[in-house]
Length: 226
Ligand code: CA
Image (cartoon, rainbow, N blue to C red):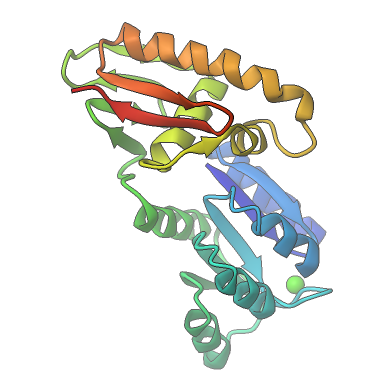
């Protein structure tokens, strides 16, 4: 899962990144509102942690821009202020949850899990598609109809997770590169095909009837063969 952290306090941002990375999240940091908004507009994140008092553009403005651009990424707002008014403004503006500083990291992780769970099929770190079940923490792919399972490498896991989270839509090569290798990695384009072929082999190894379908020039999507 990929998280965007928009926080101008560098010490806090680094500490949160460390906590989130330990929990297997991939984290990008923006230290001001404008940069944060630009990153968030790509739509590649599974969750956004958004501070309110930010240079450039405040958290409420970032939130408003994102929602008016139809970016529905779950957003957890952070603020040093505990006024009820802020909370109401945040939730009214389309934030999914709200956390007051200072907070325990355990609380932050629980909130992140809660807002991302609302988004998709994920329960207890598992995603399902057809007869496939992907166990995120164990990096394991299970076929429910055959009982076979196989371990996935980290990039294979991220690739399949992205496809499973975007069921019934085409995921472009560009989205996969940004999601798995990060920005400014155009040299990684050829890797996508390589990893797609690895994941296809593992899906067929466990005996699933799910296929990764390539839409020429567009990208990839999952399909169940009846
Ligand atoms: Ca701040």
